[in-house]
Image (cartoon, rainbow, N blue to C red; front, top):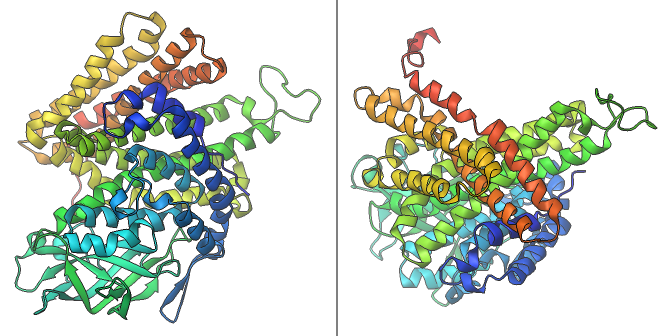
Length: 593
């Protein structure tokens, strides 16, 4: 059975050596001293390894079952959920006013990676609740917050998001779910939603559904969509649970992966709902949840890649197969371990350099979110808005590819369920699809985010990269050659692609949109290149200061050099594809496919 060890040391390195969080000038960050963050991460890592990871295979093999309208979660899930609630983990970064611990989002992000890596399907129950609670916190009335948030922050009640319908996913303006106004200010919600993660289960006393619907008589299309709170059980004035609402689970989807999470068809039959936010402004309220979910899904790409990589490394060190072409490394045995072979090393270095770079990228993004919210920093908010589709799209595309590479290390055993490697691949696959398929993320990046606020935020990103290179060049010849020069070249590729879109996208928008996925991947590589340059600088500084554990820092430098030399040059390929335009992409008539 696969294993998992929480990468707490690497997280500490990123938080304190690279991001210097205690010096960030963000309220609440002063308390994040290394000993404090270490205690949190170590405890979360212990829960991940000892409680959640052993349930991962159980959740995959048992799945969820629907019996008389009640969904039963896999063996052990309910007890583990109680442990998570008792430890206060669901409310780690939620307001104290509603029972949370008010820690910065960056700590919740680091903890979330470990929970997701050890058991993605399980962690989704509390992750979706966090997102729903965030939407209520941002857009709810005081009465709605007081009614729902204390129970949701503790996960005594859980939450969901209901967008997709059988006939529409991305194009939500086509939805048919209706909301009929009632004399008491509530609404009757009628319709069907599909693909609702954690839509029904047996681990919480109530489930608070956030449902998109159209108020009768409202505007057509997306402008007529509103968001409603629709609890499974109605809540009495004293906070106790009342009558069962007109919402039920009609079916559990049979899925490729994340079997331990109940993905439900939800039926609403004149269910009582309460408007969240303004009428016909439902997408604005839902995007509070969607943007948080997209960052969380990007983290899922990283988490599954990390878990798969850890197991692939152990297998490569243990499995004897063939001889090293430069001479036997295990002369007393019948063969050498797999890890001696250059192509296995290439695969493992792809995985390692991605996971460590992605971890830094995710945590850097979390710092931006804290800066935006805790400092009311519009520039940070604009930059993380720009990078959200990159985090979601690039990290899940690459994360899935890395689970495939990890599976490949096992050869035929990677295809056999007994070894457990296929679960990482199957679980990672959904991350490329839900919360906005990655093609949509690419269109959002190129079609909306680049031009947002007159291009202010993408220019700020380019200035950030340029300033970093300028401020750190000329101090170390090897660092300049191995890190800054590749970063500069990749950044120029990205700027050239943006210039191509400006020059060619206006006269033919397809010239931009046909290159959108390539651009998203270019952007992702540049972001990871920037992260690796910063990590390398921090490692060099630590070595120069005589810090202990030199092997850790030297390994970090070697891994970073690999990324800059072998992975980052992909930007040149993506640029060539982009500059080829849309003609070859759009050449065939639909009938000729």
